[in-house]
Length: 187
Image 1: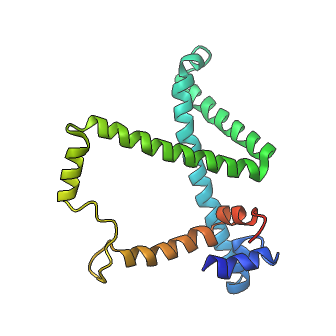
Image 2: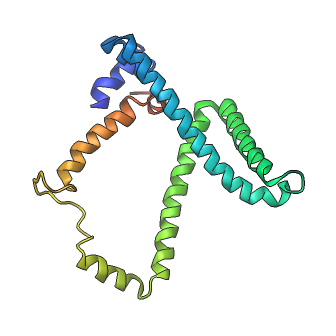
Image 3: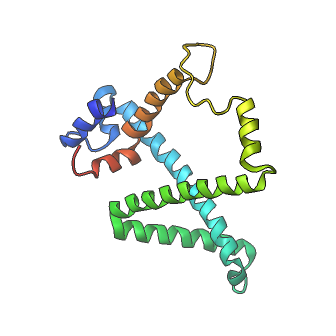
């Protein structure tokens, strides 16, 4: 749906933001509402991300920072440090820096998942045998359920239809994803 409806308009140069499409289709009121909602929610989300990273930075640097300031000020200094470093690499590297950050994050997520899996495998008494018996008895190894049912919450069809709407919302109308799509050389 995204590649059929949104991307051709973006790559023709007719649209530069998802909100221009909303403006053309539904008018200025909805355009302002959706663009404003995007800005507010992104500001809150980025604030949470910066704060979460600054907690880790503060823990790592607190021993050194406490020589120069109070514990409360060390948190503020950590937030400032994370913000300044993020601004520098984003402004200096542009979209390339943003995309490479996404690549690095993907490797961290996948690597963390693998490390977590083997750590849990090692910590559970009985190891893989116990996990396999317990999960198998609870039918947790069934990946797809193709039964058509309106009463079952989780099945293949609900995932397919729900995933289509979720992907359309996140990759077709979210400006952060749209700018990544527009940064590609070819549609």
